[in-house]
Length: 236
Length: 236
Image (cartoon, rainbow over all chains, first blue to last red):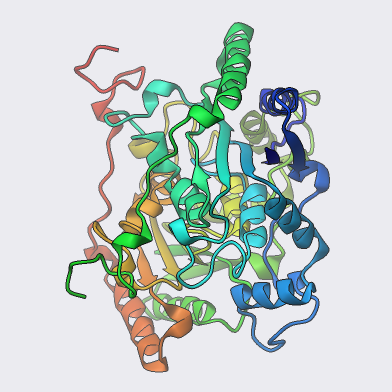
């Protein structure tokens, strides 16, 4: 497989970064090609703005998604965006690798999502979910967090982690058509022993080696909705 | 009330911005004080990094949350963060005002959350949810989106909007102790008539004038969990 890893963490010496690099070693040892977008090392700009477009379809009023389409067709998009789009369309597997900030991705990674998942390429009109522009490719979320595992789940204080990650897993990755694999989660990272951390490294290696055996997360199919996106069999 | 509005949108002429400014007029006409953080006009930096700290508790290894505490106590945090924290602690009502990007806040606003909701101030240890550092204050989310209302709800293609907003409403605003009011949502904005847009302006005015009558969103209380954050009455 061709694997694109998009990562961010404010501390290069972090366990999160060690986990990422271990994953790269494991993937390469397994014969996969890996490209890394280390957003911090790149100084990646997270802000979607008018500056992303060299020549605008409409210079007087910015509709970001429309300019994404125009700029991609004309190759006038900002070079940092075009480079990431090329990597995205090259890969078979996209890994988003990050520490959980506010039950979500850090702003730097959110900016990669905002700017790189182009309208007209990753999605557009009714091309979303299982009809999304990236259908046929896979996605994996790998995250570290401070919370403990028992704080997540149906009766737990924060509810299921997958529910907190819904806008990412369903609203972003599945939205673009990606097949979303079960996330790999390293819990309570700032507080655990080296032994537990070694366990996470081994667990992640096993997760990556067994990707083909993982059951993807289940989400609705557009086949169950009509042309106006009402559930089929119901009055609109 | 003292109201802090934190807003972002890539197009200053947008309806989203008009809605924000109309809200400011309505609030001021109602006798409230309003401070606006227009993150785009400010050029607000969304990236949480080592550059946020003038003098570090630990210069060799960055633990972002620990340095937030240290930097706030010593007033050595980056001035743009300190200015926002001061506004936050001044307000009775925080309004986050944005266009929905990937079922979430744009990266610029995510960066405000990452950098300004300080550990030790907004939350810390077991000071979260109804014991959060901002308890007693209120929060409102005001958003515009391209999707239509029938695309959200229990049987709808995207499920309930509140479920997509969970990491923001529960995982961020309620996490810090804020009383979270029902969001104001303007649907399908790029495609609707001027008449519908006028309806949104009127609806938002009514929403703001009636804030005291709104029933806050319901979330779990820490009273229902034990000292280790297991549900009370269950074996750990």
